[in-house]
Image 1: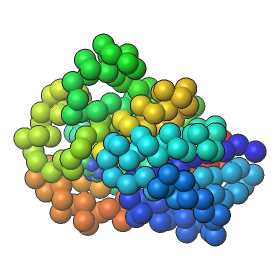
Image 2: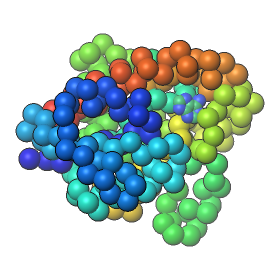
Image 3: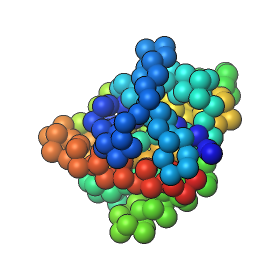
Length: 225
Ligand code: ADE
Protein backbone atom coordinates (compact mmCIF):
# COMPACT_ATOMS: atom_id res chain seq x y z
CA UNK A 1 0.00 0.00 0.00
CA UNK A 2 1.37 3.41 -0.99
CA UNK A 3 0.74 6.62 0.93
CA UNK A 4 -0.17 9.61 -1.22
CA UNK A 5 -0.26 13.10 0.26
CA UNK A 6 -2.59 15.69 -1.22
CA UNK A 7 -2.22 19.32 -0.16
CA UNK A 8 -4.58 22.14 -1.11
CA UNK A 9 -4.66 25.70 0.17
CA UNK A 10 -8.34 26.47 0.67
CA UNK A 11 -11.16 24.27 1.98
CA UNK A 12 -12.90 24.69 -1.39
CA UNK A 13 -9.86 23.16 -3.11
CA UNK A 14 -10.23 19.96 -1.08
CA UNK A 15 -14.03 19.79 -0.68
CA UNK A 16 -14.64 17.63 -3.75
CA UNK A 17 -11.78 15.23 -2.97
CA UNK A 18 -13.12 14.83 0.55
CA UNK A 19 -16.64 14.21 -0.74
CA UNK A 20 -15.37 11.56 -3.12
CA UNK A 21 -13.22 9.86 -0.46
CA UNK A 22 -15.97 9.70 2.17
CA UNK A 23 -15.55 9.63 5.93
CA UNK A 24 -11.93 10.10 6.98
CA UNK A 25 -9.97 9.61 10.16
CA UNK A 26 -8.80 13.12 11.13
CA UNK A 27 -5.47 13.74 12.85
CA UNK A 28 -4.71 17.22 14.24
CA UNK A 29 -0.97 17.91 14.18
CA UNK A 30 0.84 21.26 14.54
CA UNK A 31 -2.27 23.25 13.68
CA UNK A 32 -3.17 21.27 10.56
CA UNK A 33 -5.92 18.67 10.07
CA UNK A 34 -4.83 15.59 8.16
CA UNK A 35 -7.69 13.55 6.68
CA UNK A 36 -6.70 9.92 6.26
CA UNK A 37 -8.61 7.52 3.99
CA UNK A 38 -7.95 4.17 2.39
CA UNK A 39 -8.88 4.42 -1.26
CA UNK A 40 -8.54 1.71 -3.90
CA UNK A 41 -5.63 0.02 -2.14
CA UNK A 42 -3.71 3.16 -1.18
CA UNK A 43 -3.64 5.40 1.84
CA UNK A 44 -4.56 8.99 0.96
CA UNK A 45 -3.74 11.77 3.40
CA UNK A 46 -5.12 15.19 2.49
CA UNK A 47 -4.68 18.48 4.24
CA UNK A 48 -5.81 22.04 3.79
CA UNK A 49 -2.65 24.08 4.37
CA UNK A 50 -4.09 27.60 4.15
CA UNK A 51 -3.06 30.31 1.73
CA UNK A 52 0.51 31.27 0.76
CA UNK A 53 4.00 29.85 1.06
CA UNK A 54 4.61 29.68 4.82
CA UNK A 55 1.44 27.64 5.35
CA UNK A 56 2.25 25.41 2.40
CA UNK A 57 5.86 24.74 3.44
CA UNK A 58 4.90 23.99 7.05
CA UNK A 59 2.05 21.70 6.09
CA UNK A 60 4.23 19.81 3.61
CA UNK A 61 6.94 19.26 6.22
CA UNK A 62 4.47 18.15 8.92
CA UNK A 63 2.84 15.83 6.37
CA UNK A 64 6.21 14.28 5.44
CA UNK A 65 7.39 13.92 9.05
CA UNK A 66 4.19 12.29 10.27
CA UNK A 67 2.93 10.23 7.34
CA UNK A 68 6.09 9.43 5.28
CA UNK A 69 4.19 9.65 1.99
CA UNK A 70 5.54 8.13 -1.20
CA UNK A 71 4.71 11.36 -3.03
CA UNK A 72 3.04 14.73 -2.56
CA UNK A 73 0.44 16.13 -4.93
CA UNK A 74 -0.32 19.82 -4.60
CA UNK A 75 -3.70 20.70 -6.01
CA UNK A 76 -6.02 23.66 -6.42
CA UNK A 77 -6.59 26.58 -8.73
CA UNK A 78 -4.17 29.01 -10.35
CA UNK A 79 -4.00 32.06 -12.56
CA UNK A 80 -3.11 31.52 -16.22
CA UNK A 81 0.14 33.17 -17.32
CA UNK A 82 1.06 31.74 -20.71
CA UNK A 83 -1.03 32.91 -23.69
CA UNK A 84 -1.89 29.30 -24.56
CA UNK A 85 -3.43 28.65 -21.12
CA UNK A 86 -7.19 29.22 -20.87
CA UNK A 87 -9.61 29.27 -17.93
CA UNK A 88 -10.51 25.67 -16.90
CA UNK A 89 -7.35 24.21 -18.53
CA UNK A 90 -5.02 22.19 -16.30
CA UNK A 91 -1.41 23.21 -15.70
CA UNK A 92 0.92 20.44 -14.52
CA UNK A 93 4.13 21.73 -12.96
CA UNK A 94 7.43 20.78 -14.56
CA UNK A 95 9.09 22.98 -11.94
CA UNK A 96 8.13 25.60 -9.38
CA UNK A 97 9.76 28.70 -7.90
CA UNK A 98 8.83 31.88 -6.08
CA UNK A 99 8.26 34.97 -8.26
CA UNK A 100 8.67 37.38 -5.34
CA UNK A 101 12.16 36.40 -4.21
CA UNK A 102 15.38 37.03 -6.13
CA UNK A 103 16.48 33.46 -7.16
CA UNK A 104 20.01 34.45 -6.15
CA UNK A 105 19.05 34.11 -2.45
CA UNK A 106 18.11 30.47 -2.94
CA UNK A 107 20.84 29.66 -5.47
CA UNK A 108 23.81 31.14 -3.63
CA UNK A 109 22.78 30.21 -0.07
CA UNK A 110 21.06 27.10 1.32
CA UNK A 111 19.33 25.18 -0.20
CA UNK A 112 21.50 26.16 -3.26
CA UNK A 113 18.56 25.55 -5.54
CA UNK A 114 16.00 28.12 -6.70
CA UNK A 115 13.90 26.05 -9.09
CA UNK A 116 12.29 22.89 -7.76
CA UNK A 117 11.75 20.16 -10.36
CA UNK A 118 8.60 18.08 -10.25
CA UNK A 119 8.63 14.29 -10.57
CA UNK A 120 8.46 13.09 -14.19
CA UNK A 121 6.32 10.04 -13.41
CA UNK A 122 3.75 12.15 -11.57
CA UNK A 123 3.72 14.66 -14.44
CA UNK A 124 3.08 11.86 -16.95
CA UNK A 125 0.34 10.38 -14.77
CA UNK A 126 -1.45 13.74 -14.56
CA UNK A 127 -1.10 14.21 -18.33
CA UNK A 128 -2.48 10.74 -19.04
CA UNK A 129 -5.55 11.30 -16.85
CA UNK A 130 -6.24 14.65 -18.53
CA UNK A 131 -5.92 13.26 -22.04
CA UNK A 132 -8.07 10.19 -21.23
CA UNK A 133 -10.78 12.53 -19.94
CA UNK A 134 -10.59 15.03 -22.82
CA UNK A 135 -9.24 17.81 -20.59
CA UNK A 136 -6.74 20.26 -22.05
CA UNK A 137 -3.52 20.19 -20.05
CA UNK A 138 -0.20 22.03 -20.27
CA UNK A 139 3.17 21.10 -18.81
CA UNK A 140 5.01 24.13 -17.54
CA UNK A 141 6.54 26.23 -14.86
CA UNK A 142 4.37 27.41 -11.97
CA UNK A 143 5.46 30.44 -9.95
CA UNK A 144 4.16 31.40 -6.52
CA UNK A 145 4.05 34.61 -4.53
CA UNK A 146 2.47 36.27 -1.54
CA UNK A 147 -0.27 37.98 -3.53
CA UNK A 148 -3.26 37.13 -5.66
CA UNK A 149 -2.22 38.46 -9.07
CA UNK A 150 -5.06 40.44 -10.61
CA UNK A 151 -3.18 43.23 -12.27
CA UNK A 152 -2.06 43.22 -15.89
CA UNK A 153 1.10 45.24 -15.14
CA UNK A 154 2.29 42.81 -12.44
CA UNK A 155 1.33 39.91 -14.69
CA UNK A 156 3.49 41.30 -17.51
CA UNK A 157 6.45 41.71 -15.16
CA UNK A 158 6.16 38.13 -13.87
CA UNK A 159 5.83 36.87 -17.45
CA UNK A 160 8.93 38.80 -18.50
CA UNK A 161 10.98 37.61 -15.51
CA UNK A 162 9.94 33.95 -15.27
CA UNK A 163 7.93 32.80 -18.35
CA UNK A 164 5.53 30.73 -16.25
CA UNK A 165 2.47 28.82 -17.39
CA UNK A 166 0.59 29.60 -14.17
CA UNK A 167 0.77 31.60 -10.96
CA UNK A 168 -0.45 30.62 -7.51
CA UNK A 169 0.52 31.20 -3.89
CA UNK A 170 1.75 27.78 -2.69
CA UNK A 171 3.32 25.49 -5.31
CA UNK A 172 6.85 26.87 -4.89
CA UNK A 173 6.76 26.19 -1.15
CA UNK A 174 5.46 22.64 -1.56
CA UNK A 175 8.19 22.02 -4.16
CA UNK A 176 10.82 23.60 -1.92
CA UNK A 177 9.86 21.44 1.07
CA UNK A 178 9.75 18.32 -1.12
CA UNK A 179 13.20 19.14 -2.53
CA UNK A 180 14.64 19.33 1.00
CA UNK A 181 13.14 15.91 1.78
CA UNK A 182 13.95 14.23 -1.58
CA UNK A 183 10.22 13.71 -1.93
CA UNK A 184 8.62 13.30 -5.40
CA UNK A 185 5.94 15.92 -5.94
CA UNK A 186 3.84 17.55 -8.61
CA UNK A 187 1.53 20.51 -8.58
CA UNK A 188 -1.65 20.08 -10.62
CA UNK A 189 -3.71 23.23 -10.95
CA UNK A 190 -6.88 24.18 -12.78
CA UNK A 191 -6.96 27.72 -14.15
CA UNK A 192 -9.63 29.88 -12.52
CA UNK A 193 -8.58 33.26 -13.98
CA UNK A 194 -6.02 34.96 -16.19
CA UNK A 195 -4.24 36.86 -13.40
CA UNK A 196 -5.08 40.13 -15.16
CA UNK A 197 -7.32 43.09 -14.35
CA UNK A 198 -10.39 40.80 -14.56
CA UNK A 199 -8.72 38.12 -12.42
CA UNK A 200 -10.70 38.57 -9.21
CA UNK A 201 -14.05 38.51 -11.04
CA UNK A 202 -13.09 35.41 -13.00
CA UNK A 203 -11.83 33.71 -9.83
CA UNK A 204 -15.20 34.24 -8.15
CA UNK A 205 -16.99 32.77 -11.15
CA UNK A 206 -14.76 29.79 -11.94
CA UNK A 207 -13.08 28.82 -8.67
CA UNK A 208 -15.59 26.10 -7.73
CA UNK A 209 -15.77 24.65 -11.26
CA UNK A 210 -11.96 24.65 -11.51
CA UNK A 211 -11.53 23.10 -8.06
CA UNK A 212 -13.94 20.26 -8.89
CA UNK A 213 -12.26 19.56 -12.21
CA UNK A 214 -8.78 19.26 -10.70
CA UNK A 215 -10.04 17.25 -7.71
CA UNK A 216 -11.35 14.56 -10.05
CA UNK A 217 -8.03 14.43 -11.90
CA UNK A 218 -5.98 14.19 -8.70
CA UNK A 219 -8.10 11.38 -7.28
CA UNK A 220 -7.79 9.43 -10.54
CA UNK A 221 -4.01 9.96 -10.36
CA UNK A 222 -3.89 8.15 -7.02
CA UNK A 223 -5.38 5.05 -8.67
CA UNK A 224 -2.40 4.84 -11.04
CA UNK A 225 0.24 5.22 -8.37
N1 ADE B 1 -4.80 31.35 -7.55
C1 ADE B 1 -5.76 31.41 -8.50
N2 ADE B 1 -5.63 32.50 -9.25
C2 ADE B 1 -4.55 33.16 -8.78
C3 ADE B 1 -3.93 34.37 -9.12
N3 ADE B 1 -4.40 35.11 -10.12
N4 ADE B 1 -2.84 34.76 -8.42
C4 ADE B 1 -2.38 34.01 -7.41
N5 ADE B 1 -2.94 32.85 -7.03
C5 ADE B 1 -4.02 32.44 -7.70
